[in-house]
Image 1 (cartoon, rainbow, N blue to C red):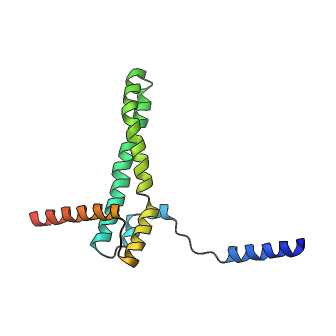
Image 2 (image 1 turned 90 degrees about the vertical axis):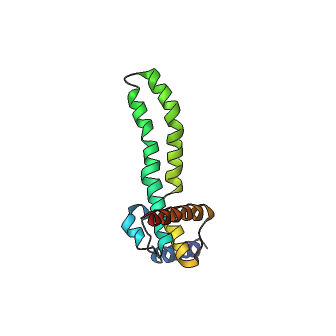
Length: 140
């Protein structure tokens, strides 16, 4: 009985190991790779929003905390005050990195390409950005 169980487990494990799907490494994808998934203006705006929030806003907010820790060597009381200000910014930047990660962007783009549906929070931001682009075009 033990031999049959071991053989069955080995066979099942071999099926799962040989039937691997190609996994996408989301972290290695850049802006140009995601632009291939763009099917219209809305999807291009979604890509812009995700990269803008992640690269500019999140990393900018997170950069203040290491600076205040570095100031601790010069003046601990000033550093303590600056840390109380920059720590919430660091937490918000960390949250934004998680919210606007590349895997979520890939999932939103593939879902949009298949079903033409967007999550509400992405739809609101994309509509706002598209309206802004239209306002800029009408200004010229």
